[in-house]
Image (tube, rainbow, N blue to C red):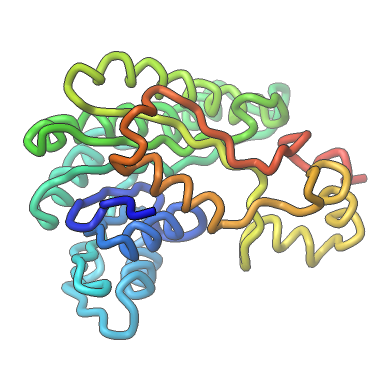
Length: 276
């Protein structure tokens, strides 16, 4: 299926590795000009080089420019928990790419442990880096979307947001992201802006957390894959990025305010019950 994404532009937060970088790569392969956002200059530089390939041309760690198969690739350094800087990053991306059609709010994380092993500050940070960053990024993108006649935003949530599991702060923040997508889909729909959530399950890729778990505890990993996944395996990055590209494209024009799960039918959000 031709997703007709060629010529569009996108801003991806948390785009220096993992799911964020994989989505940026998939969008660039579809002909989308991509700006990726990250906190660390060195990792951002590496991500832009990886996106652009061996022919990358850089303009410096904080303002990087290159080409991926004829489409522009740009890096923007920013801490997404700083709403002012995040707004500036969105503006910089739109200026460098010549406009903005798509946004992927992928940055996330958590601070502290469970309820009894975390502080109010841990919870505040967890909400800021997940929910508030998504809301602030989309707010900043709205004027640029409207100049294009509409746009599409995708919030990367988690299986943990609808299948409860530890940590409680992270799980509730991801649940809030799912509801945020539903609420913004209603609020921004009249402006021809779609907002959806994508909830990946446990995704296995080289160098990722589940890859480390597999190498460190192969028997426990095998039990997790066998008992928690109907197909006996974890989700792959390609399976997440394919759905992300579809949801962002006009081929999904009838999907708005939805939460699309790419978890392989996963039963539990974590493998915690396999640890001692």
